[in-house]
Image (cartoon, rainbow, N blue to C red):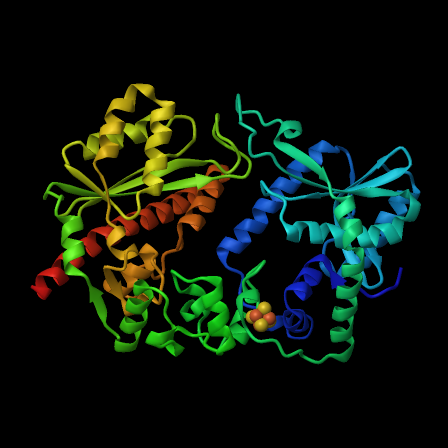
Length: 493
Ligand code: SF4
């Protein structure tokens, strides 16, 4: 085996998304945007699910090499094991027509090899089928008549963890996609040729930035191609339609700053663009006051963190079903306190804490009540004896985010974003979340799962501190935003 690999599964998908991204990846690899912690965590999750799937075909040989540059070693090793009559090979490597692929599991049934690709998702997307089609293309040519086809193994969303013991046979489901792959062969061939031309000519194709920079994946070269932050682009403007985006793209209007009042299609967009042009804050006093008028002075601010694991950890949970682990509460005077669950064995103390610390408040203020409702419903489901008190608590929830999401209150520095972080940074302080090791709810969810598995006590303590700090920052942000809104409303009067 001495052929050079020009394309892999990931660079093929990249070339289909954008030939310029493929060119940059091949010749300017170092210009890639740094991997976010969230992206890294998603990769880790994929590996975890992949390892679990190996138990479906146990005792296989692993052909993976220590470094990606040693791919020829993996290809040779795979071939040797096939020749020696092995029946299961993990990370089986093949190279055909300059395309290098790795198969999660290659299994021989009688005299035929079947390929299995593992996905940690509940659904099989068109991109996954395209991935599998590329692998099918290579395998069909490499294994010839001994190849029987390819299947995707993904997670069954209906599976429920019982007795703390996961059953891989029920957790995974199989779908044979050989027919789809067969139909895609001509397309695959054309796409490989296009990528090959780019590679051989070493010339960067001219491709404008656009919606394709984010679909099906956010491109690694956003920092190279986008003149301004894509966060300030029309793709992040709310209340848009595909037709509007297409019209703006045709006029080469990509940044929010490029838009004028004639480009908008809703009153919310008018407010966003007008505020940006005038660098102003929009306040619809009447609507805000009407929303806030039911509130008494007996308040408490509340935020919770939920985690969701592909492989369920909590008994009774399905894959990706959320489970709570942290709550934080802030009093109007500013004092903040939290409850963190060190394990997943007993949730009751968390709900008891929440009930006891909120019962004297008439209103519980949240920024978007979606997570808090999941938490309360989780409590009602698992602890019927607390249902009455939790239902009472649920009736006291007040969604403070509405005044922002309805664009009654808008700061030009939000750049069309309505996340708590964007709003808090605009209205309170630009660096409100600066230097926090955990920067988002998603990151916190992954960090908690690391916490549960961590055996080093000092690392556990650090992770716990980071998570509490993040959750408390959110609750304090809501409390500070609340007083800021009141202050600005008083100022208007
Ligand atoms: S940022 Fe957009 S245009 Fe640039 S390489 Fe990536 S997908 Fe292509």
